[in-house]
Image 1 (tube, rainbow, N blue to C red):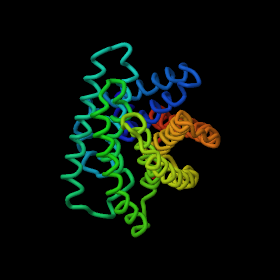
Image 2 (image 1 turned 135 degrees about the horizontal axis):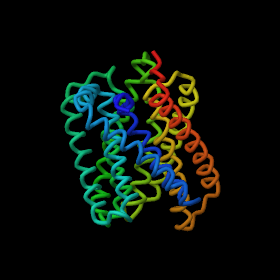
Image 3 (image 1 turned 90 degrees about the horizontal axis):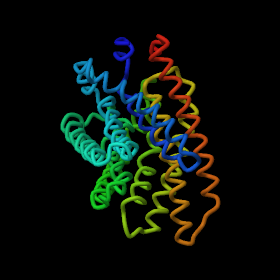
Length: 309
């Protein structure tokens, strides 16, 4: 078991995040799905915590890599969602978990900025940078569970402004430096996440709502989703890499954004039936990608299957 734990890669946190988010997405169909996803995500969390406890030096060494350091942001994001999952059982302690996760994410932002961004090297820039600066919007998604809409709104605007700042340099990097190692290629699918995460955070924590702004975000998010989906279809043909985690949360949060946008506009008296169809299709795609990715990670961890070289 110790060797299994040692193989746990940081991107497993991203799979955990995608699995928990999928449980929330599917809960409107049945709470059973939410419990199943929560149980799987809980198991992944135990694996991650064991890795942190048994091999802390290896984790610290990984955090010197800008890709792994940026992907580590999915851990506090997962803890924010987890706090809502377990709130019915642990009560007020869930709020402490939520606040701790926000603080942990802020620490990551400071560390990442000082170590990698101040002396930015464009070839080392990847879409995973969005996780560091926009991922904290997960706090805006979960803030209503604790009645902390002011925190949620502040975090949303920080994340959205960070997204607008990051969008150009990250995109320029991909356009200018086309040679990308195979293990890092799936990271481009993260493009589907930031605008959709901002949509959900905006709908959950910001009032009053500007519907022109909302639709602008949604149109942009839809275009980036299509781009990411095309890339996912291409990179699913690659051998397994930990970056397969990029096939999970970005597509789940996209389906969530489509569903919540549909509900929001419908409540305002502007129902768009096509959004329901879109949300349904994206939910099926997200579910399939999460299940496929989970299978690949479990095969790697438990079937003595090495990373592709």
